[in-house]
Figure 1 (tube, one colour):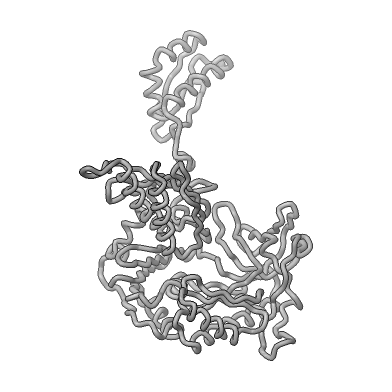
Figure 2: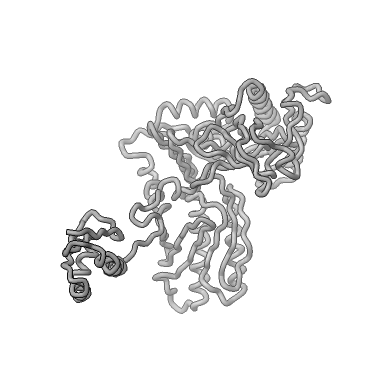
Length: 500
């Protein structure tokens, strides 16, 4: 089977991998106690309006208030009237116009319907929008705007015109739909059924919104298993393989209702070997949190994440070319190979935001152009929105990738308690010299004749041997005895001076 969706479920965690031609193209993880909230709709309450930032904070009953920018604020008419006076079709109204200044639209204490557009990341709360979108199997419903969009991945002009006509005829006046890639060659009845289901869902949400007080969860997105089947299963998927019988039953019901034309198999994985081990996914997850990734040729890439951007460095490593290959050809081959691995890692790790790729310098402009075109082509396989600038003379590519949730590294890892996430700790020499300076500060004011230094074992060893003379000089200078006590459990940067 070349294309499979592999689902691993436990009582506390769901992991889903899309494997295409034996390669993991996407990896998603959701912990049940910390389930994602992207797509959820809330009746929120404005807690603060910041005109200087053109933003507001909204209480949605989460640990951190959500962030709502002016560009995502729409004024709704008639408190979500359920019928459009100009149409015979019952419909949620809810559309409005964008305001220039946030203080013209929102006031502290005001209640507002919002949707989570981006997960909370780090110390930042969720990014919110009042421009609502409800995803279905074939279309995305946008009740707040009058617009029809067709997925760019549907290339046939004839098919695009067909889909646009179906949606135009079926949509309630003033609302919008985005036609998803899965809609290609889908018959009209299925599209209309998907649209009707989303319109009905929006009507229920609006009715609930008008009944309840903020903050309140109005609509919760499906769990990862169902979302993955809805969003990732296409006509070329050969099988959905799950290791939980209950998930298999749920997926079968969902597929039967929403993807009746699915011809692949839905299988229960019953081997004693863990499902992610059997498909080689566990090893890829270990790679996904590693800083260095080896290339088949012997080169490697190094991925470093920072607050503002992700930097990716390409190196030839052990690859020095073969036979009579010139240096320029060796560099070109390494950079081309790195392109595929970089794009793969971006998808696997869910890396978003600003990304800088430092390719090996290429003197030949034609080689730079070839690598850039290869990058553009590789990025077409990415479902996330990307934008890459041409390679500079220094071999750098600046690109962006839409960030909608934490990266795999952020999700699976936490800051090292030893270095506090910096990747470095002070050397034993540095700490030893800090100890000597501290003795000079404290010894004169200590009443007793003995100064006891408690420090980590490497620091104490360094003071006893390499800085033995310095200790003796301090003893002579202050007429005190300096004792060193090794503390094996101490952090290397931690030490204490006591009187003894």
